[in-house]
Image (cartoon, rainbow, N blue to C red; front, side, top):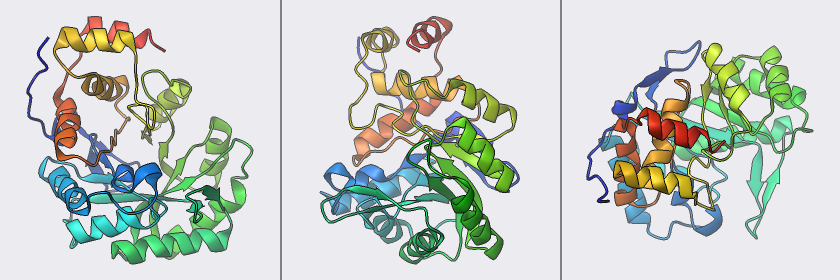
Length: 290
């Protein structure tokens, strides 16, 4: 079936206000990770196209961009500043800290207070900001201690370097520990049509008005390849990627999606999913994948 040629705007997905804040964003956002080189390491393959993607994202209604200074490292933050500074008042930039890249592109974690502070300061410097609206503390395993790094995050929030605190790659126990130390406005974990470990967490967060931001919403480095998804997409005349994003938006009102791409045409396709409403037959088929 012919794929629908549908123009879209991120606002079609509706809006979400982070709890205890004045920050409201469209539920369809953009993740900047793919603007860095292969393996999220090294410079952009096409820096001018990368900057054009960022400008086009804003033109299509995106007002929530997810980034990190360890993408590249430093690549995505530099591109964001080059393309978008001075930033419009309605734009919310969210970063994450807790990791660093070695010269071979390896991912290393560090949750010490000194490292977390340097990471926030590096993000601020490269983005040209005096405060990060939201900073996600990136954990790595369920065994990672939450208390000391969360105390460091709370201290930076109290000093004004961070407006609000989020978490990334945490389980429910870590989330509970963190919330005892400081308010949490969002959780960013691995979740998509076929990765449903966090179903209960999403529902619990929704009840408390806390955002859930799935990373790898389309499968990440290994894109979703699911026969049932392809069947539903073909019946609707949509791409599988659009259907997968639309399913996330309909899964729960607290889900914010941040699909990433380094291509303007792919960006437009992703944003168009904000206005795609899945019928009951499609939802039934896709829900069964979990």
